[in-house]
Length: 166
Image (cartoon, rainbow, N blue to C red; front, side):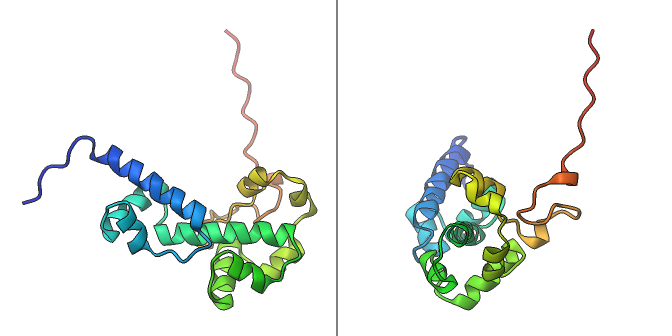
């Protein structure tokens, strides 16, 4: 029979999940696997994956891929490095896997992204550019959403009417 969870267990899990997420954010370009990350925070791989998904909305492996693609997007926009060089610099060990994951998240190949990245993206501060250009998995995108990287234009929410004054 399983012992009852301590009341502070979810809070402890959250601290450990943040520690794991910080490790991923710092070392996304290094070889990472769920088992070793889970082991580092003292969780089983299954429990870690389940709790990570509950807390952050995606499994740890997907989060690693998203971080790698985000960094690749920044390098494609801001440097003249080759796609192959960028692929290896962000932690992929295969150009094919990189291109596939990039296309799944961004909706176009890395070279097409570099060619089509709007000029206004180059003028943004890196922290703003990351927020504006955050990749969304194609299957998770809502229908009618603005195309990736496009200004929202007609897709902005309508203005709400002013509240009547008392």
